[in-house]
Length: 371
Image (tube, rainbow, N blue to C red; front, side, top):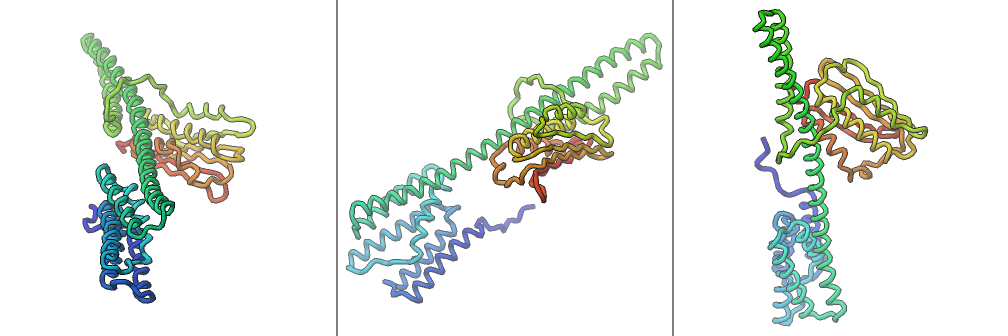
């Protein structure tokens, strides 16, 4: 059960707020501030704005830019020096936060307040046309930077969702074909059993019923797996090639003189559900493809499949130069593999080996998600 008291603020939020407060303490200790009580209160407000910049970006921008603009106008009206704080740099962080975490109408209002605030500040203490234009451009550029990061992250999140949905749809199509196969076998045996029963061949009818019982049990198991792989939208099932454990040996034929592929099948690998066999083939195929594309200086890819009474373990390892994880983070094949294995109740991990090369490890229960 999630903790209801979990704070929405990260260590980074608290860190930025602490930096603003630290700058305020230094100002109070070593500088002669104009209107000290007002400066201290406003500095504390800037620290609070830095803390809530992600959850309330519009409010943070309105307070900071509006506050500086009001202080500039009041100082100009009474003929006083403006309030200057070392923590004033936080306005750029808040402008970035507006583009990064603001939504729709809030961004438009925030940009309007931001431009108005900068316009008031440069009008009261005009630094020159070039400096004024540069100041406005800098602030708008920071907002645009935040917006670009936001849209890039949103696009990547959408691609991840699409990769997962594609893997679910492919799995659902394979399961559709498998269940149809079992149901067809049940129908054939039922017809044979009825014919034998009417012909007074009870032994033959009993055999047919036993086959029906086995096929029905396997069908129910596959149906339970299918439930976890239901698609959001139904589509016409496309014809898919059903892959088996024996097909893994064919992947070794994709090797070359420069990159050898070895496949080893060990243990109990008989009578695996088609969904599990298909997942093993898919993960192996994707892992070998990734090794061929990304494993620098690799000479060998080893595929090891071990079956036991409860699960099947797959390991795909290459001996290429060690890959920095960030270099493969942009791909979505790994996301699809992880989704497929998870739907069947298994786990998948991938990462660099201690010495060199890259490994993909998957563990699948023999009976899929039912296990």
